[in-house]
Amino acid sequence: MNTMMAARPPAPARHRGIAEDGIAAYIAETVPVDSLVAGGYLAGHDGRLIAHQLRAPQLRQAMNRSVCHAVQPDVDSFFQEDGEPDADWKQRRTRTVRDHCTVCPVRAACAELALRDGDTAGVRGGLDPQKLDRRLAAESSRLERARAADEQATEQQRARFAAGAELLRLTGQYLGTGQPQKRRENVEKMREAARRRDELVAAHRLTAGWTAAA
Image (cartoon, rainbow, N blue to C red; front, side, top):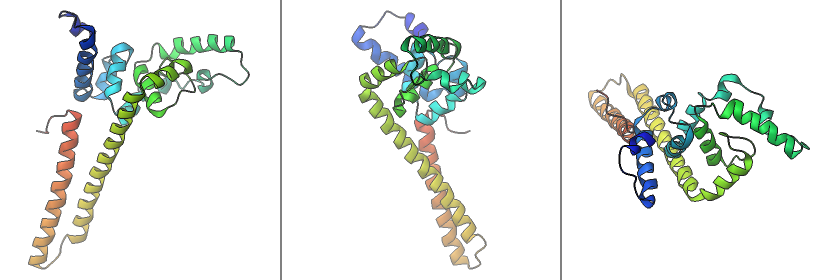
């Protein structure tokens, strides 16, 4: 995004954040998660803006490409031990961030997921607990909106699953009914269930920024 924005005169400060958020939202809606990771879009400043736009399941999907997922480090490396002097923990934390977080292609997604979950106990996305707590407080309104959007996305997913299950139930219940009138009624019920399922799937594809299937 910085490259794209460098090609035009810098926007006034009050508009720059809005422009960046709009670009981040467009990228998040149109680029698959795996492609975001491969393109380096979930690390650094730009990654932070894009991670803001992703839903929680997408953030968790991105975590499958994290350094931690690949190498399975000792989880204790990310937490201060009981009674450990702050100076020792600071040195160990610095090594952890250097060896795992700095090179991680999804560190922005990791930090965002921690903030959505309110998990600030250890190092996440290269941020120590103090930095996570500060962001949690500073971005409370944004995070509240993000959590609400996550819940809405979850409810929509449940509705899609329920519509698909209802279609299967009707198909199994009515398939092969002998009376012509009853068959017509059953076929109409199945068509209505299929329409409902297709409407929910189409709405999901539109929200996700996917094009209609050919």
